Image (cartoon, rainbow, N blue to C red; front, top):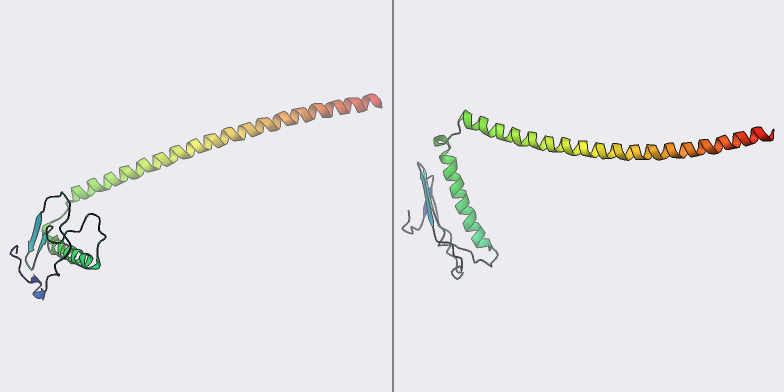
Length: 154
C-alpha cells in the first residue's frame, strides 16, 4: 500500500495505476496528506502530493480520469463497508424532526408573507372603495341639483 506499487487490486482484478502527471508542482500552501482505505476485498491509496492540479489550471482529461478513478475507489470502499456502519432509529428520528422543523419554519414564513400580501391588498381595496364612494357622493350631489333644478323649472 504506500510503497508505490504498480497495480491496485480490486476484487482480484489487476488494474494498472493511472499515468503520472507531467505538470510542475503546485503553488498551493495546503500540506500534503495521504488517505489509505482497506476493506475485506478492496484496498486503495490516495496521496494528494502525487496528482495535484495547479491552482490556476483547468483540470485536464487525464487529471479528471485520475480523480474519477480515485473517487470510484473511495465509493467502492464505502459500499463495501456499509454493513459495518449504520444509523440508529433515534438518529433517523432526530434527522426527520430537524427536517420537519425546517419545513414548518418555511411554511410559517410563507404564511406570514401571504398574510402581509393580503393585508396590503385589502388596504388597497379599501382605498379604491373609498374613492368610488367619494365619486358616488359627488355624482349624487350633482344628480340632486339636476333633479331640484328640473322640479323648479316645471
